Image 1: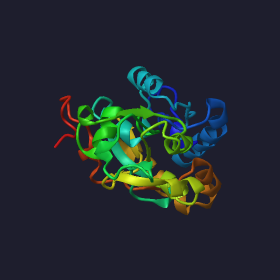
Image 2 (image 1 turned 120 degrees about the horizontal axis):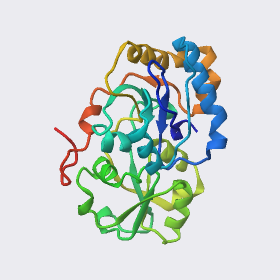
Image 3 (image 1 turned 135 degrees about the vertical axis):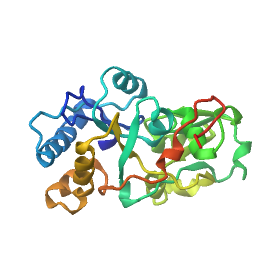
Length: 267
């Protein structure tokens, strides 16, 4: 539930935050108790005298519209969102998530075990919950622009369910992140699919500060990075489906998309 949220407008001095992960399942009502618990924890640790506002988003368009009109102080964003929009919304990396305890992510393009051996031979639809930001996702997975792909990318809220469509031949492939792949390996469907392409190691979803950083930025980063060792945060981290938070990836800035349509990332 963690990676699906966005909050209300950040008032001056208020650490309102956003968590934006397009493609994650669930509804606002289902996520609300977890997000409110997270906001309460941050409120206590930051010793804020203002209520921290929080609100759920797992769809890209409403999230971007919200950031455009009412930017929060900070947020947890999907890597594709950062890659595509870091410059637009002045995102400064300040920490990193640790889903499944991993410090890096890897994306894998999965095909049918009885299919071809080259991913370039695939045609049709490729689904994944990180594929809503198609331009950024293409660069992150393949290292070149979207217009060079021989197939169509399609975002989905149910990447594991999409594996059934893959096995039945209804779609050409499914992209899984590291945690999803580790889960699928232990399932019966894992014997019916194979890795067609693997990305380089990628950053996990970053924690970012919107706009100019200040003293609160470092204090908040310290609070987040201290959660793994805080007994009071143990249950909350389980609900958030992450093992904690670590330092910001030092190479994250290289994953920002360039301004030109034919550019993948800025130098």
